[in-house]
Image 1 (cartoon, rainbow, N blue to C red):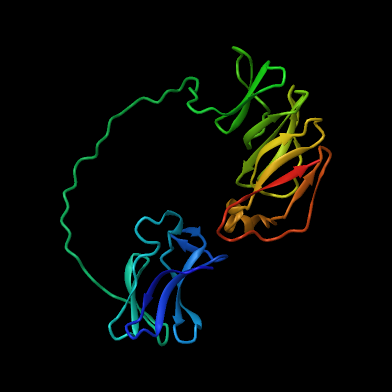
Image 2: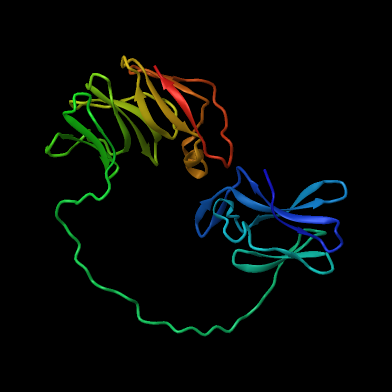
Length: 283
């Protein structure tokens, strides 16, 4: 990958920098995060590189407002680098990679005030939905489909009572009516099972899963004759880390599906840090 936060040694022979390990993770307070960041050295004479400390404080390239990494600096004699890691000051000895903690104490005086708190009563009645998304009317204009509370709801226009599309517990998104209004396609997400594309009869019934591979799916769209569905599939950043290894997720290049079943082409590995969307067709 690339390099961030360069620091040149006092003699001008070495450059220390941070670099991500794309498939690497690290445990922080009992939680697994990735990709992790390591400190590297580059010989400015011959261009050779070597990793000298793994891991270091994770970088924040995606939300870099004041530097992607906490600053690391060379000791004036060029034999060591001082940096922060795990909330402590550390000294990395360049020759042998030894890491020593630099002890320090500080006197801090703060005024702690009483917590600002105002009791309030929780409403136990019907939920007043504040956010409605992906609203789309049926081809005949008689029924509205929309997403609220991570579920797809149907409502007879103009003043019907909303009813859930089906009784499944998965998160549902981006409903799309078939041209004849007899069915809807939608995408789903589950932390246990991943994402998929489905169809379900508009009158109710069991949804049919169109995709066979876990993925991040969105925005299904029917062809004019209702024989095929085109949808967007992301690069899979939500499938990386411990969850994907636990489920044995395989990411694929494309997927073509029908209402009766699904098949996929040969798998490939997605780019480690860049999230993108590509179009897939289910026919």
